[in-house]
Length: 292
Image 1 (cartoon, helix red, strand yellow):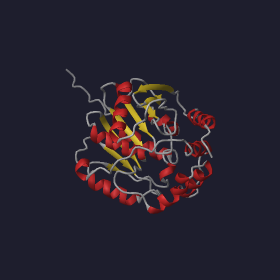
Image 2 (cartoon, rainbow, N blue to C red):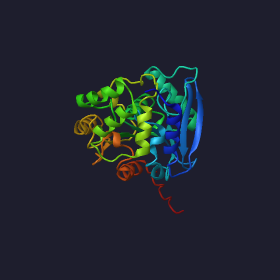
Image 3 (cartoon, rainbow, N blue to C red):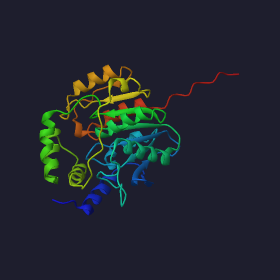
Image 4 (spheres, rainbow, N blue to C red):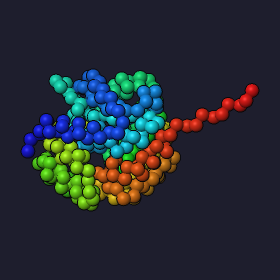
């Protein structure tokens, strides 16, 4: 089954229409193509950049947008070269890890200038967020990682085995079957599932990945960090993920989200997820000034 661009864009817009707050769509020109950003929240609020997981899109944060925009200016970004509304056009999308971080630098320059930003990433987006915080510590205020892959532990062999048919011969049917397995057969949102299935057939380049950060590199992390493993994740062992993260990042806050799998994030159990994120990202109270 080939990629149906019209159906994909229709499904993308249907999910974006479910954001419960006004959304401003921004198209940023970069050396790698045009980057689509879905922006919401007060323009003078602290900036929060959301990086979706592999196979998902920037529209996927609809269940979290209301809570996050109460205190942040949210920027949900579609990566160039992956399914979404970003387009490389006649340019080459990021091919290397350095390309990826230079692209993210360009996006941040356009959105916030030299200001620091909070980063939140799910799955592969978590690896990008953590890698960027390590490479560009002067740009990142706080870091939230939602069941991240490639950061603290490897994939389960069973996960790779179940993903193989979808990756070898992508189709919406295979993507739906994979989701049903990973999420344990719980009811999934039909709009999100439809978009994920269509995205599986996107003629994308190979996602840019890199090695797991070394313990020495992680020891240099300066940004406060929140790590939220998914208790029912079949992607990796969430207990191993939590234990290794706590050991390698002793200053991080590690809270396992009960009752949700890797691909159920970020919309299943959204209330619990949003409570953790908003508490972590809450603006610091302004101290009372002494009375003269």
